[in-house]
Amino acid sequence: MPDCLSDLRKKMVTSLIRGKQFNRNRLQGKYWRVILDGTGLFYFKEKHCENCLCTKIKTEDGKTVKQYYHKVLEAKLVLSDDVIISIGTEFIENENENVSKQDCEINAAKRLLPKIKKAYPRLPVILQGDALYATEPFMELCKKEYHWEYLFMQKNTRQKILGEGFEWIKAGEDAVRQHGLCKEKESGFFANHVEKVAGKTQTMNVFEYEYHTKDKNGKTVTICFQWVTSLNLTKQNLEEMIIARRGRWKIENGVYRIEHLNSKNSNAMKNHYLLTQISDILMQLYLAWNPYIKELKQTIKNTSPSSPLDEKDIS
Ligand SMILES: [Zn+2]
Image (cartoon, rainbow, N blue to C red; front, top):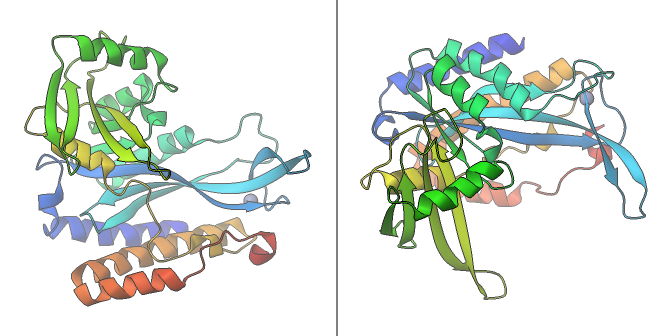
């Protein structure tokens, strides 16, 4: 059953891409942005099914308790600022309860990517994701295996050598600094082909954007983002690349509350989830093409329950 729902989704997505209405939103006029995003779906105090992921948490009174949960990795296609739709879904789950190492987002991505390639073999894709993905093996997978471009966030905690490399690169003569970028009119820098400096063999271009904002106490704070990409950076495309990575980054699941998914049967749960993704595509298109609906959308959002549900709500 999940396969036939995936097929339906694929038909919808293919016709949207072929329709050309969204072509102008491609990055650098060519690449369709596909965002990888892992989302926690729901948590349980007791084991829910044999595929549950498990973690230990400390309660307020200092006790350690086990918590069971389900996660899903979504691949979302950016059609426009308003329309970001699910084109691939991979459940992050253990094969059984006795696995020595739990399933994780990276492994789920390795299962999900070939499915996307198979469904959209000729689509020029730029894959976007967290710092989690900014590793050499994953960059190589993108380029060599799937012939996709990539754009990943970079954090010092994840890639220490690369983080130190950034400081070298910034001080070097190949770094290009640019001012007056984005709505804050602040500055960024980029440098192409820094793989050697960063201790990598994969082609790597890096860029950074730094701006100032006020925190909740009114104190000025500096926010700095760093990214790595396989695309060549220029003075002309730097701002577009920064905006691409700052855009609606944390994906909301439309106006639906997927925490409401409720089934002890894991197949039924997956079908339910895929159906919410399909209805989300329809809802987003409807909202994007109907300006009057946009106001309504806010109303629906404001009236839907937003507090995370506890166990009694999902049993
Ligand atoms: Zn479960």
